[in-house]
Length: 302
Length: 168
Image 1 (cartoon, chains in turn purple, cyan):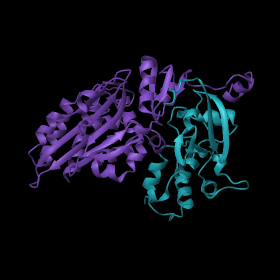
Image 2 (cartoon, chains in turn cyan, green):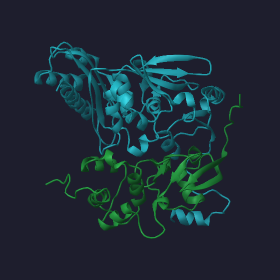
Image 3 (cartoon, chains in turn red, orange):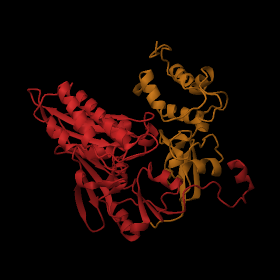
Image 4 (cartoon, one colour):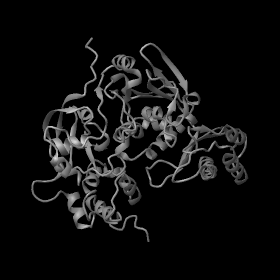
């Protein structure tokens, strides 16, 4: 029986073809209203922004929240600005808005480079930068970008505001430091000024979830040696991971093919690879992570 | 201060659909694609995967392409929605549709509304060559054409040299 036939056989008063489980929905217009609603409904509620991860979960009925609090009309959360060397992105700012912002590209070219890898155009129209970070999919680019840039998460509940550095925000797959009554209201990306940046990944199809990827920053000294360096992997383990050992190894040196070999080997050896799925096992991901770090560093040193 | 809005499982939405005003009370969980197809009878928007991967349900919200299978009807409240019905002339085809027809840009046609809406919402100057056109189209799946005809149709509709970017 085709879905259409099924609908025709149903009594007319019954709503046909429903995918998400039933929930109640509210669209507050101020942050206070949103926080009030979240304080009231806490565990039973989910915050909805672009919905590009949450609504598929609802369609599959993998998530069954009783209340959805849509924060996209909250004026305070629609802010994007560069202030004192920091790119501030409010929770309702879409990925597409940031992708097209010249101001964002000047302040954080790594973020601008990463965004075209995030889903497809149709997802980025609605998906938000903060939403992707709060969702913390292990294969997502933006959590790794936040880790590489040492971004700071601004988190609010109805009673407290706190900031959480990226290094302390991601716990594991889809798990972060956010409490049920908290909203990630803003992400602050420190401006990376004159540093070079790179995002490399492999995925089955452009725009699909990455099997493995690397995001990096590299600042060379006038003498051509690496002064500062940050490298983060995604898709390899349960959370984005900084490669501090590799970063330290690169600092103070010139990028040569010998050093690239070492960075590749060191990454493959030290990466916490525990993601396994139909596309690749953990050992493959670790090995590919090494190759991707090599490509990223090579690109940034060129 | 206005009262904090109460979460509700039925909500009245008003939006513009293909230029005409629409006001309906819908379940909060109603997907935008289902709202258009089932409640408004606009069946040009097709549903393939229903989880935001295949692109068949692509339409425009405030002029920008979105996946209507992972957007709620209540989220379109106050928006301008354009479906494939809204870009189709009363008689004949619009230039992008005609180019698809001329260049074998479709076979079974199931994915076609999604491709047409992605292209209608795209700014051609952002996609100056074949590689970027393919990147743009990566969010829509077609299992019939192998995409060559679709890329040719885009070139024709956007007035591009037909050999541009062709691999030797």
